[in-house]
Amino acid sequence: MAEGIAFADGKMLAHKADGVGTMTFNNPEKRNAVSFDMWKAAEQILADFASDPAVRVVVVTGAGGKAFVSGADVARFDDERAETDAVQRYNAATEAIYAGLHGFSKPTIAKIRGFCIGGGLGLAVSCDLRIATENSKFALPAAKLGLGYGFAPLRRLTDVVGLPFAKEIFFTARQFTAREAEVMGLVNRVLPENELDGYVADYAATIAANAPLTIGTAKFVFQQIAKDPAERDLEACASRVRQCFASRDYGEGRSAFMEKRKPAFSGT
Image (cartoon, rainbow, N blue to C red; front, side):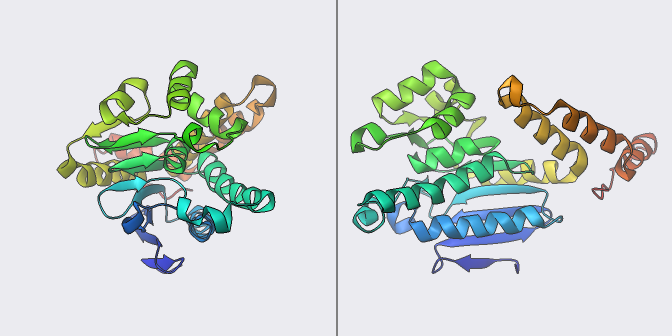
């Protein structure tokens, strides 16, 4: 994939630079509501980011300044989610993105500005970190639309905020402020509007500069922690730790520390 490329008639954008892959939902006239084609394009973008060793961290965001993602494009429900087969097809496409982000091998950051609603909230909680502006709004309005929510999406929400807050978010279906989201642990940081871009850029650059094998190992271990105990692969965790200590980057980290310089990690 070339740097800076559009998908789904320009409604999905991908950009890669300095170790950071950025995926942008670009449907601002509809507050970045997502169609089936956009979800499929997102799957393609993430697959490219995952396979590119130059990409060390992924930022997910929305264009236009008024929304991260405001959920599914309800205006297209009659075309995309009217019949049972269509619902299953659409849900499979969305779950592929949520599960793909949740299990992504590299750190992911949701950069949230404005509305983070429904599928947008599902997208955000699938990322590792969530950084939002003070004017952001969060909601899961399924109960106002009669939509069914299954185990996987509610498990991801619960893993982030805990069961009591997950119930409050879902049962009320109301909008929560960024400060309320911060109290619940739904977001990691809340920032003034004019500080978001610089803050996330610095955060992504900091992560991208760290040792990829160490970060990847920690990401894998965190994913195992989130699983039921019987499903955890502790030997795989230990194997990855051993690979870190056997890597060239381990030697580079030690040398850089002794020489009082910034390490240059290669991921090997």
